[in-house]
Every structure is written in C-alpha cells, then in structure tokens.
Image (spheres, rainbow, N blue to C red):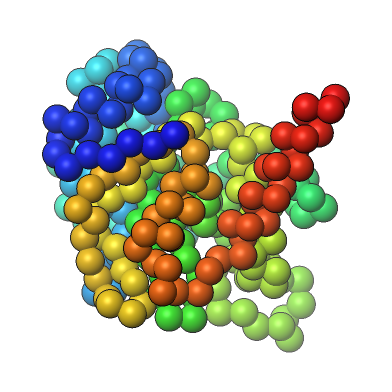
Length: 258
C-alpha cells in the first residue's frame, strides 16, 4: 500500500492513514537515508527537506529518532555539509554510521549478510532513499538502499587480484541476487515498515528531475515497481525486483500450505 501527496498537509494525512503516526508517538525511530557522500550534480542523495519534514514530525509527536547510513565514519560530516547541522543540534539526533557498527550474521538464500545490531534497538524504521538510474548502474531506490545499510569491512573480497570498484565489492559479484538476498536478510532481522520517496531524482536519459509528489508506503517492492514503471521504463530493468517478487510469492505459498 502507498499514498501520494502534493503538499505537506496531504503528506501528514497520508502518514496518519498509513499508521505511521501511532508508531512514532513516544517511540524510537530509525531513519535510513542515502548519504554516503554529500550531493554533487547528477548524484542525488536523500532530499534534506523531506528528511527535515519527517524529523520535525517525529519530535512534534513525542518520538525520537536516529539517522543511519554507511559513510566510512563521515555520516555526521555529510549531514552537516548537506545543511542538516541545525536539526542535529536542536533535537540531539543520534547519528549511526553503519561502517563503524557491530553486526550480526544473517543467512539469506545461502548468502551471509551482516546487519548492524543496533537496528533492533529501534521498533520503528523508516527508509528515505533517493531514486536514480545512472549510466552503467542499476536502478536504485528502496530495495537497493540497504546495500548502504551494512558495514563495508564485511563485504571486501578475500583475494587481491580481483578488483571491483565499489565500496562493498562482494555484493557486486552477483549483484542482483545479492541485492535481493540482502533486502530479505534485513526484512528477517530488522524490517523497515515505512518507505518515503520524493525530491530530486536522476534518469540517465533525461538527467536530474524532481518528483512532483511524495510517495509513502509500507512495501518497498511495490513502490520500486511503481516508480520504475512510471519514471524509468526507458531504462534497463533491475532483475533484483523479479528475484524478490518470485521469492515473496514462493514464501507466501509455503505459508499457505504449512
């Protein structure tokens, strides 16, 4: 399920309709963003105004929040460079750089993944990625956001003679299956219940563009499929969406027949 809004009033109504307001009240909220580096042209990151709106909303409803991302220890600096310094100080927001965190190993379809232990300390979890399809990269939004939710040190290659130019090269050896398996590992260990998409995006064929609406939902796969079909159908389709769709259908059948 997801809702769309064209203004803040509609957004707040949608937040309530989705049940997020009740999850926030007097609760600890974890927000996963996309900010491994500050924004540069054609490399959109999580929209800071959208993030600010949600942080304000959380605190105005009696909640508290932490912001997380993998940024090699520089997440706080990246937030400051992105103009978020005032809110960090006002609310004393905890900043969690996953690259510095201890993790638990989770097995997902034969792959070993490493999820930060601290994720389980937050009963409410929200993902606010940026949406993009860049040249020679795969479509990235809610599902692929979680590649940046695991410590880099756990995803380096064991052999030095294989070079993959990526922060977590193990994931890129079998990219689509690993993205899907990591998302399923997150879902089994510390599922994110809410997903928010909006702000600046990038399509390799048209460049940067702004979403005219904010999308908020409780199903990452549903939102990714909708946004790809609506705004990126001229781009290469990401196979990890099909892998996830198949896995979820098979699990539903198993549960039905159990």
